[in-house]
Image 1: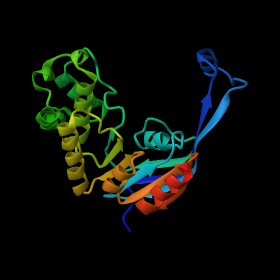
Image 2: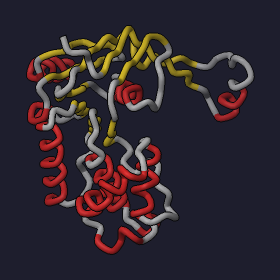
Image 3: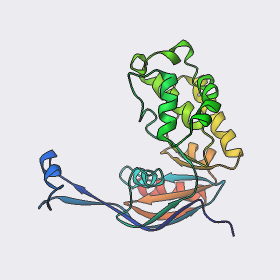
Image 4: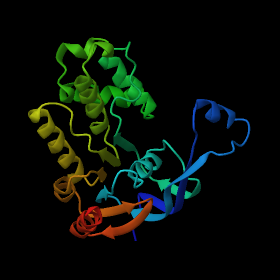
Length: 241
């Protein structure tokens, strides 16, 4: 049987919530009394395979973002193990890692370095990224001169053109006018046809059902259901009533 591309093995994630920055600073040196604990994920076991398009649904605070942050390596489990086999592109905070003083073109390289790409590989995809972002002459202007929409378009263009093994999407398609949104959805569809694993977080049942062939319903950090998309959406909607 094919090995999973993503594995969550009995994963629990607990955050410590401090009252203020002073408490957070003190916690670096000793235990802070009175700090609250928040259980973001509890005993999560998942196996996701190459080529699957998996929707992740749940109310705010259900643990969706924590799940994605573990897959992208932003945070780590308090207990258990997360294994990811492949290059991850995340359409989460699209502009994270950009330097405002550097040009758009220079930021393509900066973002590429952050993602662990080589100079040679970045040069191969550079023009593809520029063409997709549709920034015109602004590509050689400092990113501080960009609108928020222009920065997001550049971030999206970089992430979808690095040929990832896993694409993580957190309702990131609000990146421009209707024409550009359509272009983004078309690009994601192309990526999926190549057999790339897609994880899609959304509150939109139509979006989940349009893109995904499997869905995971989270509630208060626990996996309540993992399987058929329509069933997962129905369980989520019933819970909201």
